[in-house]
Image (cartoon, rainbow over all chains, first blue to last red; front, side, top):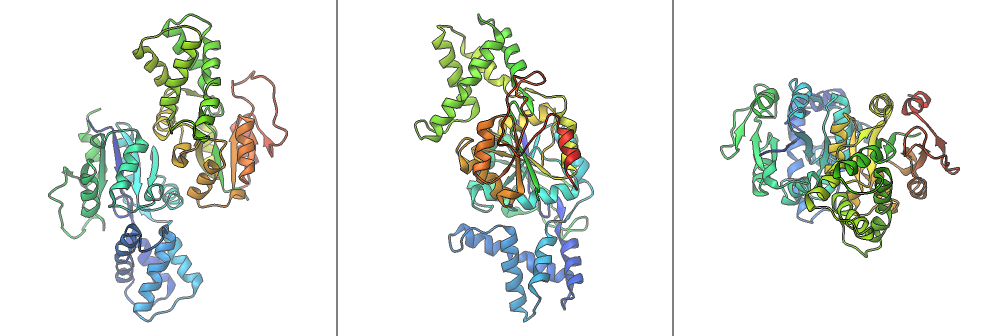
Length: 224
Length: 224
């Protein structure tokens, strides 16, 4: 029996790409804003892996986003003043949720405990939840484990803080590597393959226990 | 400038005494239920101090409540079946908030970040927040610091997770020892001297930065 649903945030609940592309547009940087947003985001996984491998000290998403932005700019021989770089990093605190999320989380909260389980740090998650008026029963962050998903200790930290067994917790996420990490820790997994919103590139995670589109579909399926 | 308000929970936001006394009444245990509730609660501080001093391994509130209940029963040469002891421990998960709390937190959330900062473990805080329909921006627990208030690391963990400086955070609490601990860590403090609700024994913390009765008084005082 699943007692808690834990949600990945970036891509799964909030649309990072539109806002970050818009922030690049506003920055005046040369290049296609959507492509810049994608290239910036792609640099996040390698740097979190470096943290997990001990090659890099702990840094929260603001710190990692600044470092990866600087790497992106250096690679393309582009320059931006520090103030504009900071504005781009701050844009990650004001991402809009997908249209189904606010009400979907409310419907799910009536049936289960609902928590965020994100690589984003707590202060960032607070800002995103407030910006989108998203209500969670609690925020659980990789920061609390001082390791990034898909490291098993992140999922185990969530399970421990919820006071549950792994098989009582289900992760909903848009990224197969995250779902795989959760399965490895004994959680149920639900694929939500819409990182880029409706019209996302087709992909599937055949190993996920279920796949959903809209959150209210999931709410309708859960027995009270 | 205060950016976040963090709230002690037991006594400050929820009325533990009425529900725990009622649970004793239901248990059939001999003795005055209110007095039993007070005696049980009094045993909590020494046992959390033992954890902080390393004389006892980490235990969450469910574990500590069970241990202190057993100590109380032994002292009075009383007995209760394990199932009834567990029901008494579980009663701490269903405490009603004081009447001003639900709407007061909502009003405060419109002006500041609002978090719980409690010695209760996360799973217990989730249950209390759901039971009372209390909305926090996040739950911060002593469990995340593996130390109990008033140990400084609990307040510093809150400050770190909020991504703020100590002087940007204000603790609202009903217990002078908690307020003192927070001040020692550099936080602002607000005394809410109503642990037992309206009619609580008069006491004051002259060192607190402010004292409030109802939460909406505080909300009215805060500049946006």
